[in-house]
Structure formats: C-alpha cells, structure tokens
Length: 336
Image (tube, rainbow, N blue to C red; front, side, top):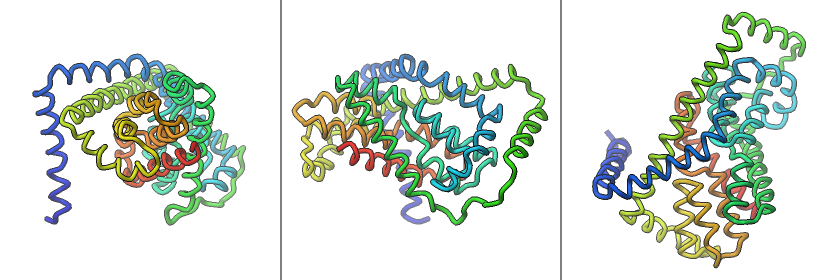
C-alpha cells in the first residue's frame, strides 16, 4: 500500500469525524445551518429545478433528444466533435441550471447513446448555471444591478463554449462520418418509440418520480454542505484557507474580507456571491469577476451533486472538475 492510498483512505474519515465532532460541539449552530440549507432547497431549488428536471426526463424518454440530434448533428460535430444530442442538453442546461446538464449527459452515457469520450466532452461544457440565478438572484438581488447580470450571463456561456472548444479533441476518437438519411433516422426513432410499451402517462409518472428523487438528493447535498461550511467556519478552517489564499489573491487587489467571502463561495455559490456583493469597499468589476468564477466553477456543493450523477458512468469526475475550474477561470476573465 503506497502513501497515496493511505491518504485516500484516512482523509475522508478525518473529514467525517471532524463534522461529527462539530455537530456535537455546536448543535444549535448546526441546526440553524441545516435550516438555512433547507430554506434554499424549498424556496429556490424546488420551484426552479423540478419542472425542468421532469421536462428533461420526458424529452429523453419521448426520443425528442434523438430527433433533434439527427437534425443538428452536422453542426455540433463540426464545432464541438459531439453528436447533435448535445445541443439539446446544452440548451436545457442553460435554461434550468445546475445540475441538470450533468444529469442529462450522464443518462445519455448510461443508455449508450454517446461514447465515454463524447460524454467527457459533453459534460465539459453542458453543465451550466441558469439565467434566473445569474440575472435574478446574483445581479438583481445581491448586486442590485440587473444590467450587470446580462454581462455575467454572456461571459458565463462564453466560458462554457470556450471549454467545449478546448475539449473538442479530447479522447482518441472522433465521431463517425458515416452519412445516413435524416428521414430514415427519424422514422427508425419513431418505430423504436412505439416498440416501447409504456404510454405517455406512464412516462410522465416515471419522469415525476425520478425528478422528485433527484431533487431529494440535491436537497441532501445542499443541507449537508450548509452544515459543513458552518462547522468549518466555527473551527476557523475557512479563516485558515482564506489566510493562505489571500497572499496570491492580494496581488489582484483582493482584500481579506473579500477573500473570506470568496472562500465561502467555493463551498456554496449562493452564500459566496451574497457575501462578495456586500464587500462594497471593493470595485464592482472585481466582485463581479470573482462571482463569475464561483458560478462557473459551481462550488463544492454543486460539484458533489453533479459528480453524483457522473460517477455512475465511466466519465472521469476529476477531468470534469478540471473543466469546471477552466469554465470559472474563463468566465472570470471575460467578466473582468
């Protein structure tokens, strides 16, 4: 057993023990943090995500993804080296936000509709935030500047598309250039749909069931990471990380207060963006740039949600996390 294996074994155990000790030592604070996470889930995530997740499940089961994929396949293959199905995944992700894009891409891979390498390319740019969060929650609600939201939104999607272009040649494969009739492909898809004995209401019920289960999983992640952040703050772990990162970030004009707010966003982007927006002593462009990084990177809470879907496939979660770091970095640069 090498050193890396020993660290990989004991590090998660150390984290769990620290959290348990924190909850036992600070029960009131932990309960309040859990309630805050629950509030975000009930008031923000369920209304904004559940309809889209149910709709996304339906468009996959009803073969809408397949038909649209055949139509736009030449365009997406030329630009991103992915099949046409990816365009619909990207559109749904941009409208609904995290973690729907990663979930849809993972389902396409699980159903063998895309290859491993194509799945990796797909999740690299089809996992995005939604306009409601960026323009509504962050720019309007936190920064009190709706026009800033449209700039951040454009930069967020430009960052995503840029990552897709960077990952275009990832893997040892390229999509087949075999041409087949669009009409034939569509008719075959329709025939395959009718071979499925499940009627619309059965598919709808399944979509609702899967959507609710997905939201329950997301809610669990949000609540847990709210408690994790609170415990780490009480143990001064956040302050320690902030002090370490302050040294390089100070070169860009980041103050200690802004750095602490930024670190909080690495755990949960809603908390981080809210705290960054309140540091009024810092120029708005810098605060917006840091917020754009957090939204593109998505934070540990959302990364855990997305990796929960991706890890059930043979798509690499490590490469996915790296692609999200690139997304955040590019979105931040574009915003600045």
